[in-house]
Length: 473
Image (cartoon, rainbow, N blue to C red; front, side):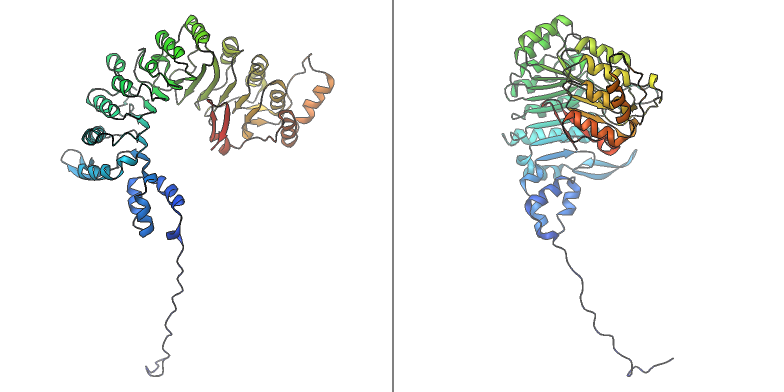
């Protein structure tokens, strides 16, 4: 129906009902935490939100941790053979270093597929430090991981670094006079290069170094002596193929506190130090604590045993390795009077039978019975609720017991032992009938509220072996 224009009602002007949040008024401490979780490109985008966020972009605390990857400080450039590629932008790099280099405390170089960008950035950082002496003295931690699996093909062969990339890394470490924490992972160097990899940093940081992590510095068995030069070193992470009698002697003289022997999928199956050398190390350094750890998807399904070492912890962080009776018996034989922590972290990716005779229940109980100093036990495999009760009852010094809820079978399938009284056997069978009763009895035995862990919580479990306690993340 047609209506005259004069008679039509004019629409009333809409009121502005939009409401603005108070994100621009966030305190500086909160903004710093937000910006730290972003990479460099995301930080720049976040700085365009408002004036307050733009000011937060330039805060010193935001740049205390600098992370380099394949996209940081790069520009797109067309290559006739490879198409569009990300290449390092030297002008942006120079500008960024002028503004933020003095604020960096931790430098992280992640595994990068573009080796030339990584090489160019390390050279640019070394040239900047040489041009402005003391500009990088605030850097106290360096994390460097090489992509040794980039060239992995059908033959499963891996390649390490070396050559110009290694020399650029050495030059960079030579300019970081304030380093106290270095982590070098999977360099897989040849023998000669590995023996001289830390020449410059051992001269510059021989007194300041506190934590040193050298994981698979060389591809084959090569004893490294550089860690023994750092006289104030308190924590050393090293692969077994880089440890030897002479290095162990130097570490014992320097009063090293924690020695972590770490294996992964690139670690060779050699590197066991002699029993006599470990005995001498015990005499020279009574506070030495050795920790054995196997992680990733290793080629060899067992830890390289160090007979006679003061091993305080044995941890498996590999989803493909299960508890075996042979491993437990070897642990009891070698470290029965020293072991304090034992467990398998992460979620398993293997099948384990539900039958009692094929499970690891008996091995775990035997471990606690013959290793009286164990105070932390981590169990991720199938065990019965009765086994959980026996573990809490058997461990004389057990304080921390972590068990996956999805791995516990509600059963009392233990045959009666002649050592058990009728009252104890009735208690075991009764308490194992429900999860709530099992948790209540374990809480009573351990002396604090205890419960089974979900897979989400168990996956995030972390153990601080240096402080002999745990935390969850």
